[in-house]
Amino acid sequence: MTALFRRPLCSQKQTQKISSTNVALYNYMTPSNRRGQTMKRRTYRPPRVLLTLLSVVLLSYFATPAEAQDKIKVAVGQIDAWANQVPTLGMKAGIFQKHGIVLENFGTQGAGETLQAVISGSAEIGIGVGTPGALRVFAKGGPVRVLAAGYTGVEDIYWFVPTNSPIKSVKDITDKNTIAYSTNGSTSDSVLRALIAHYDLKAKPTQTGGPPGTFTMTMSGQVDVGWSVAPFGLKDLQANAIRVVMRGSDVPSMRNQTVRVEIVNADALKNRHDVMVRFMRAYRETLDWMYSNPLAVKYYSEQMQMPESLVELQRNEFNPKSALNPDKVSDIDLVMQDAIAGKFLDKPLTQEQLAEFIQIPPR
Image 1: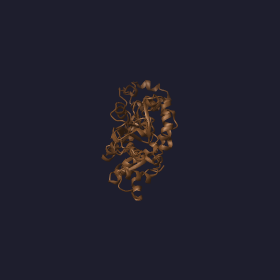
Image 2: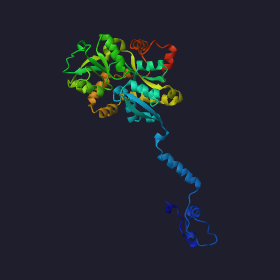
Image 3: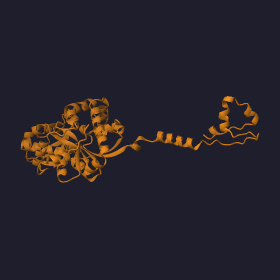
Image 4: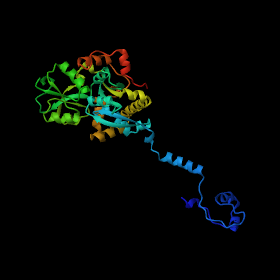
């Protein structure tokens, strides 16, 4: 770099040979030699203003966009489930980054763990939380608010047994059997309670965590009836390794309920409101992308190591886009009735409490 700006050595006679078009440039790069003195070798130093401008340009060029982006920690229950994929696929597609946000996603075993993470502040947002569980925490004064509806209906959740199980249908489930759910306050917990009431089951509910661990426990006989959520287990269902004995949609009253919500820490919503509004913009855009762009199926297929055809099947049949509509919490009165029946609530929330609890940013 120094050689590029070094002044040339030249005599007074050589100066006279410089063409008139280069005189101005030459005089700028060489000291005055009007007295005929011999020129000395000098190193050219760019003006300080030029150096400052050059520094600004270089810094702006090499600065990474992430330095200016807002970071959000997100706890995701059943992080591999398609219905909970907005944070993961949205980051992979670069959609959240486009809105000036970088998500730090981590998985939990279910809504119970997700709620604890948001309550403690170790996560600002929680994905896939059972609505009754969120209601219970709010009613007890916990710093939890609804940022978006997560899932309406119960099409994606089901209970299964190995094909060699003596349980052929729900009628064969007795008081000697155990039935799995993930964690207290989760969707699987509230739906199982509703199924038990609907079918008048006497089996013992057993906490087993997420679908992978539950599958292992069910196939090894540690629990009689396992629970799962699409697309987990669909390959085994196609291979006739398991048999479905109950689905969430068996309970008529829950078919139009928003059974899962996306929650936010109340302090984070208050102190970083603009960031949460941008999060929801990116959330909605990602959801549209997941149901319109083939890359979403491709990315998820690679992540789950399953055929793209199976991904499309579970998306279209078990997870219709309408079920993931983030802008409306449906049948909240019925949700609260079921929450009271399941002992999540002592009484329904008032309209003022609901307005405080549900704070979905408008489009």
